[in-house]
Image: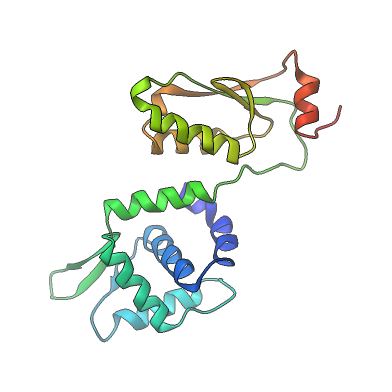
Length: 201
């Protein structure tokens, strides 16, 4: 799922501070490439800098930026240094780091608009228990950010395929069992929806 958002990560890396960019791309690379990055004093930083330099950011990260970012990630417990057999150290992303990476993926998530609409609607419906209030509020926020139209209190509509994105978000917040995505051919208020999403017809 993460690999499907590389282009969105690329867009994100073109904005913000160098440290923010370096920190986020470090998490991406660690997760996507499943590094072990060699972390011996003599090799680790040069190896990491090489990886950053090969990533198409439009601007190379300096050795210091990479070092600072890796130190920051370790301090935040997003990565850890593990000693392997033979005495060498590797950098490994932690459970906390993977969770943070998934959160970044959601922040950068967009629903792709195909060249031609298939004429179907995606209806996201949920019945979330009160004890998951925080997760429900987060889900509402994500649906708004992704451009969904609120059809009813717990029913949101979008014209383009979005099943994977919604499942990813719901699972992240522990709401997977309470959220469903239906593909619907038509609605009585079809014209209102078409106008809202500028689909014409």
